[in-house]
Length: 263
DNA sequence: GTTGAGCGTT
Image (tube, rainbow, N blue to C red; front, side, top):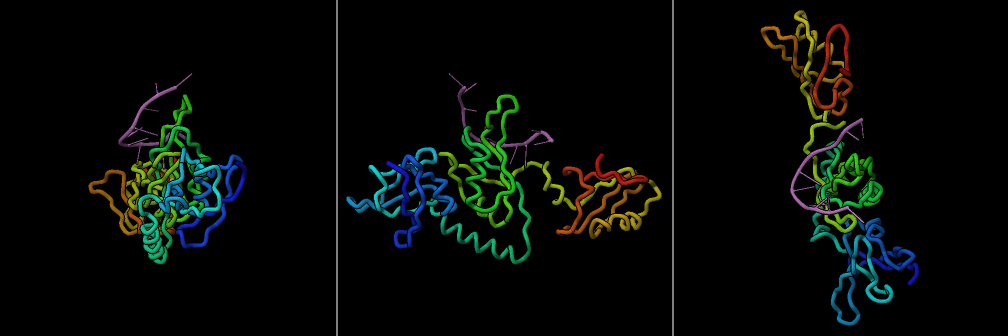
């Protein structure tokens, strides 16, 4: 069997799209997913039995049912009945987008096959939308995958879609979730209250407010009494809030005679 | 050269 195109559609009645096979006549699930994001397999109606039949899928590779793919139309399978759910999710996220641009966050990808590489992850998740970064966590000594990784999308709606369904990656079901970890470059922005250390006793609340308003709207200044050489400054959280003085989620800020953003 | 619920060396 040689390279060919097979006809694929979301529904038996819809116009099919031709997608390429590999040189050995197999078709990669990733190729299908490139045109039908979230696809997890193919099925077709048997000309003999008139029943729907599943296409053999082994580790992300789809195999022709007979000696070749013939001229059948293959229908895309989605996880469970997720197609409808995905559509609803699109509508929901569209509403959110109208309210304002949503910030994306890293997603943890659980259940990865040991063999899955970052390139594999990139290829897979790119079928959902633009990908900013992917990571596969590995043992530092052996280089073996730990079976999980991270992904970050450009658009929040893509993130929502990715979280709303399971993912068939290299033959295993994987899940995308919001991570629990506190560290990470996106975490500091979620914090509004900043610890201000090394304060001197002469620093008044107004003075602190005047100073910190260069970074964003200050909604509260807290100075313990009696004097304890620190304070808390709380900001109104918005897209313009500068994060230059945050240090990896510890909300650390140093005020003395100089400002030290990296202690 | 193993494993299969979880949470990120930089």
